[in-house]
Each structure stands twice: as structure tokens, then as C-alpha cells.
Length: 303
Image 1 (cartoon, rainbow, N blue to C red):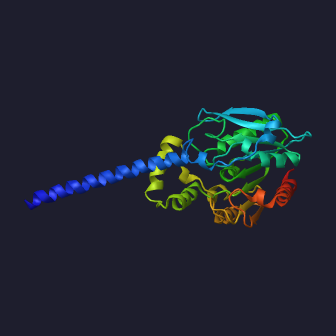
Image 2: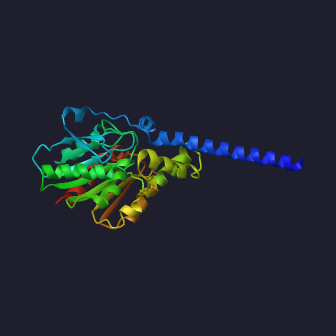
Image 3: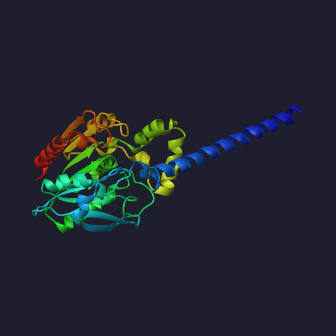
């Protein structure tokens, strides 16, 4: 009799464990889609930006078909005066190329051509899952190669904000020889650390087992391993001059990431921590100082 009851309890426990595991996998699937899938969290954090200026400039619309067979879109704005210097401006999570309006205008006013892509799954580009800067690396290089075809003697600079800054930091090892410098404003040091931070601050949830399971979903649905994305790897041998900017009041990508990225880099580098600036707010907070500092860095390294 006791053995029979014990067996029943074993079955109950096993059934409960299976149910809990299923619930964890289902819950993580919803969290994964919330963070990665088009129309998820990115639509809630997308900033409201006046894009009137860039639309009035009537930029050229460029296209590429990436390795996943997806059609991507970018906007190219030639300088007022002919130049061989071009800035690639990469948007953040929940944003688009057009929403980089203020940064495009800043570099255009400095006299440069500007290319602003819509990353995969954002804006007018196809795709269902965010690349968080890691999957976007090859696409950014393709955009740069397209510029090189247009201007074989051209020089390139890279700029990114938030996820776009991380994309810049992740792309540096793949950058063509004519990339003269990079500017990264409030970029994270790894996708894993950023998701861990967001899990804790937004949902008060543990990293384990959520992120290991999300990694499985990432490999299956988004077709990349976000565990592999970190600047310790991508900046280890970097020699391209790098300017890191970060607000010390950033609650979305903590300012510690700026120090980690700065430490991970081994080329000419500069770090500017902007007092009282929240996430992606340094240009708004510092205005002309931001413009002058980025201009000085660009002029110093553009060949």
C-alpha cells in the first residue's frame, strides 16, 4: 500500500516538474518575442522624433538584399559640397534611419555625405527579429561596400546610438580599410548583459533559466547566437580610433557599459561621460558641446 502511494506521489511530482518546465519554456517564448520580434517592446520604446528635416532633403533610397534574403532600406544624403567623406549613422532599438534626423543633420552640416540604414526588422527593412547590432554587422559592411562602389577613393566614419552604437562596436573587426573612426553613443558591451539588465530592472526576473532558453529561441527563430555578441571579443584587436559617449543617468543601458567598452578597446580612444544625461539624451543635454566634440573627433581622424 505504501509503495503504491509512493509511486503515485512520484508520478505527481514528475507531472508537476514537467508542467513547470513547459510553463517556463512558454513564458520565455513570450518574453523572447517581446524583446526580439517586430512589433514587440521596440514599438513601446521607439522615441518620437521630428523627421521633417530629413524628409525635406529628399534623400536617395538605397536597397540591399542581405544574406538572409531580406530586402533592407537605407537613406543616402549627399553633402552640399562634393566630398569623398561619408558618415554611416546607425539607429537604436525601436528607431529607424529617418529618426536619426538630428544626427544626420549634424554630420551633414559638418559637410559629410550621410547614409542612415533601417536595420533588419525596423522601419522599411524586412525581417521579423531584431539583430541587436550583432546580426546587423554584415549588413552595415555591405552598405559601406556600396558606398565604396560609388566612391572608390572615399573615406568612411561610423556613428551609432544605443543598439546602433553596439552595432558599430560589433562591426569594427569587419570594417573596410577606409573606415577612419567610429563614434558610439550609449552602446552596451554585450547583448547578454543588456538583456540580463532589462530582465532585472523591467521584470524583476532571474537570468537563469530565461536567457539560456531564449538563446535556443534566438538560434531557431532569429538565426543568431546573442551570447556571442560582446565587445571584449570585437574590440580586442581594434585599431580604429573610437569615441565613446554615455550619459551617467542612463537607466536603459547603464553607464558601466561605457567603461567596459573603453577598457575592452585597444586603439586610439576617447571617453566622454555626460553628466545628468539619460539614455540617448547626450545631444539634447549638451547641444553645441556635443556637436563640437563629435566634429573635432571627425576632423582629427578623417583622412
